[in-house]
Image (tube, rainbow over all chains, first blue to last red; front, top):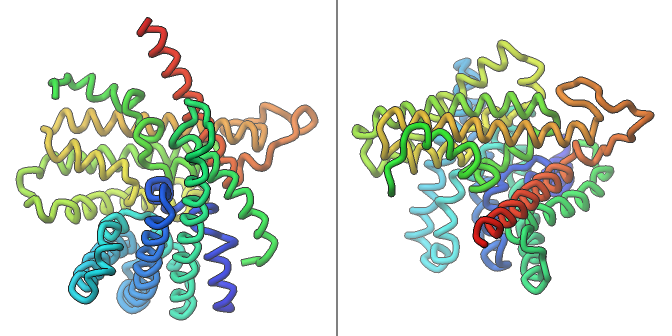
Length: 192
Length: 206
């Protein structure tokens, strides 16, 4: 399978947020402002790409040779949790400005189901290492794209007159629905 | 915080503090697997199993776990039970397990379960924790079944695979079983519930 296809499929056509419903919590929680959305997206993309590669290595060199795929769940979540911790420590030491802008999002990423979901899909579809790398990157870019689009719309929404019952979460979900509708337009683009 | 009886702990998760409708937790599975009523039911029951087992376990060992490592401990406990549920579904209901796909393993990162472990089970004795988890789980199941039924009726014209509206009488709204339908129906559902809660508050206030 072509890596470009894998990348585009993960980023646009099969967008993790809008067509697989992964990472809805940060999608609803952090999409209130554009700049925080961008930062959250970048932090997630970074961890996602790393996680995709590392879980691929663990899955193919440890779990499969020893016939332990039933441990995938436990192993992947621990890998992601410790990876996030490592990244946090590394960024704090090496680049304090970056830490200030991304720091608070890192702990949130551990429970971002988009990352665990991505690693599980990757194991399920038996991607190669390079494909996994691009799948992780594409997933991250797709997540950032959805988050940024959403934040842009919600900033505009501040000035709109929303019925009282729909304020907050319901309106956000309705907008997400329309965004998902728009993204379905890409469905014919690739057949992956 | 006022002391609540075990029945109250159980009841609050069903409606007043419903995970999906009120606390907006566990949104991912609520949206992802509710394209039919049966999927919603199985997902809800699997999540209920996991939340009850992990809350029981967390509550039992709550004095043994050091505070600094509690989150990883809870994740490992939850992941263990999720694996159990996943293997059970694979063995007993292969078709449904296949339809749910990776969303069964993804119960691990369902924030509803984590929130029960962290905010409730880690601070309360065994019985209230179990009641609280059971209530939360059943409340979650209820929402999933209702949402799944709405989407299945509008999208396929059937409920639990029983046809109630034939194709001649009703053109299925395919969009309801596709991703946008999930967002739209859950958004409207929460909106309608907010509306009625508001009405009731007004009425009892005057």
